[in-house]
Length: 279
Image (cartoon, rainbow, N blue to C red; front, side, top):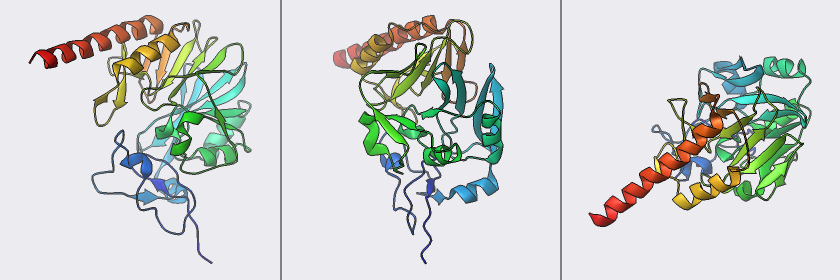
């Protein structure tokens, strides 16, 4: 009997649908927002990955966060958010370990998974299965990027999805049409937080964010998309911004930092356009 494997791309960490042989190419990485690794397209299975990597489990501001050691692919981390909408796993990473599931169950389990955009779909089906088949919320605008279909996937539409009085998924767009952030008005610290994924992305100085269509290939986001993003985010207050990976966090003054970053980005891009036109 032919063995089927759900192969994981080594460059982006996306798990693909079961197949007898490795796929020819990862569609996520062949898109201009990502890239095929310098050594060419390479694949690994979840079982193989568990032999070379362990689950990194940290406590950030009282939240459980999960990643991988050593770092793998894009090296995002996921959060367990204990909200009034239930326990939400925000983002997924390529491996799921018994240690991670035990840590989550010790805090009441997970009611649903929500993911910001296709680069972080990772092994979302593995996570749902390990957590009892919990639903996976993805924006319908990004349905074409789902590489491993799964019965737990639920697509939502529009610019907002209120999960409770204090938790809202916001379509940011720009990076992907369905790029999403999670706003949690009540936590984890006073003043609330924005869990931004890649849009907006917390930059290295931990005092600003920025806006890119492609981060690894350095393609700026179109100004009309940045302005639309600013309008969608205008009504939300937050003190903290939790970015896509370890250390990419703005603690305190997050709303002001994001507002200032909109102005800084748009001024820089406008200046560039003016200089190019007059050259």
